[in-house]
Image: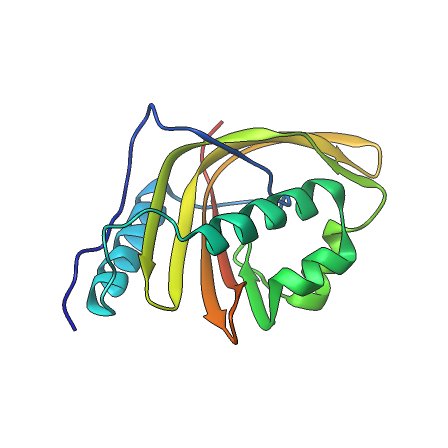
Length: 173
């Protein structure tokens, strides 16, 4: 298959989103860049095209962002594939069940933030939505701040988009 991966990386194009804070203890910016570059190459091999996000994907991504900030268990369960996995900033692997439980915990609150340097690669039934964020919030009464890169891998199956994998890398403050 041939095609062009649209990996938009700009400092001026910002998109406000919300994400669940994952456990972060280590990571390297170079590794994160390598992972994201590899994802773009993978998307190209699968026939990624330089088009804008499909409207149904944009809608699903916005719903996912909202579900995370609101801790909406039902919506997270709908938007995450049953085989979803997260590799958090500590290198630990979490399942959908673990991620939903942590994200919908009433003692966890995340403030809105803006994705910088977004990367979007879309192909027929898949996409990578990634970027860099600085987040703040509270977890069981303790405030936290973090700076990281993330990549969400989306898959379209049976007419609906779901996140199947997320990778998070902690960056220096």
